[in-house]
Image (cartoon, rainbow, N blue to C red; front, side, top):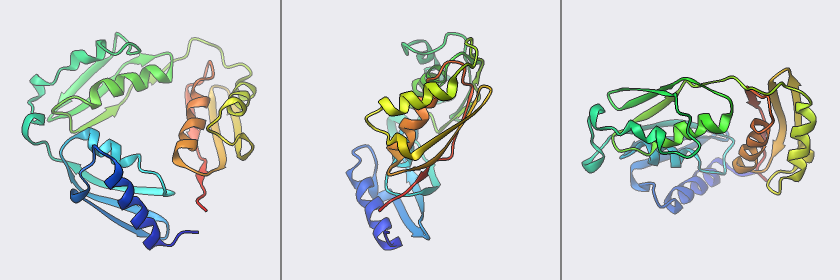
Length: 210
């Protein structure tokens, strides 16, 4: 089991390794396995990249976005038409912008469409943050979801299916168990979202680091 000092060093090294993150502006502290990130970054995408750092069980995110240079844009200048540019993006999503913060509203059939809408705006200049309020209303009926997800986990080269438990209640899925990395946890979550009829996934899988 890693000490807090080791955990802090590992996360700092990961941030330095991430090419789009400004390591000098990000502070890292660790206590009882919980890592706190603080500081200021120049774009929302840089903040997003830091949030994906692996090696910890829990991240307390206290990073703020301070737009600088070419990334400083007014709300009117933010090109929200990019929602239509994403090949997976839904066509009837509403984007509301206030002081650089984008709120997405609407309804889609699949989680990948919801994620595509988020991806299409979070990389835009002038964006300080994104709230995704798009709701899911699957067209497919929630049948045999548990079995479908378990088979998908077994097929996945990224997930140790033997350590992941799947429970379903109608169209709601709950994942539990333990895996070795954030990436493995995310892959399990994506497998669950890919099952027809799913409109909610609770990913309670724990990260166990050796």
